[in-house]
Amino acid sequence: MNHLITDLNKIKQLGKQNEEENFDFRAFLKGQDSDEIDQRVHRLYKEISAQIDCSKCANCCKMQTPGLSKKEAEQISRYMNMDIDDFKDQYVETDWSGQMMLKDQPCVFLKDNACSISHIMPEDCRSYPYLHKDDFISRLFGVIDNYSVCPIVFNVYEALKEELDFDPEDFDDFF
Image 1: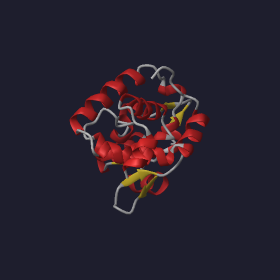
Image 2: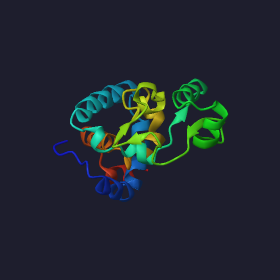
Image 3: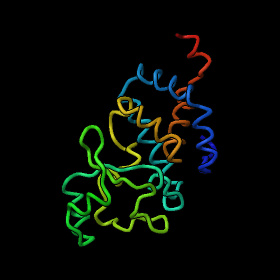
Image 4: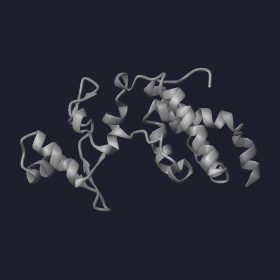
């Protein structure tokens, strides 16, 4: 990939424009060797993330609601000198599966595009955008969700299409 796209408006626009293609590519990837795709994604992630300064973006902190473990919620509430129940009432919601997550967007801990609780940042935040993890192929719905949010995810997904010579028109003929 020659030129990285980092403009968030352009990425959001391309996310809408490429929605069908991205789902076709997801289906295409399901037929690929998982270990090989992980190796490619990990390499691309390393190359691309080295060129993008997350502190100039922080779109994940503006658009996502990270999950919290009970221990993380307790650590943050202690740091804020709050009772855990008061902290949960003010800052946490629970999704359909019972997972606790910070409820506000942008994140209340985002200050000048930096995390004000970085020393106790939730694991969900620390590991974002999750491209360093294995089993990329099994996490493609999340990848597609993050495609329009994170310049790193956007550029890795596009570079992967390029590396694998994915042609959406050829793929349409396949089905």
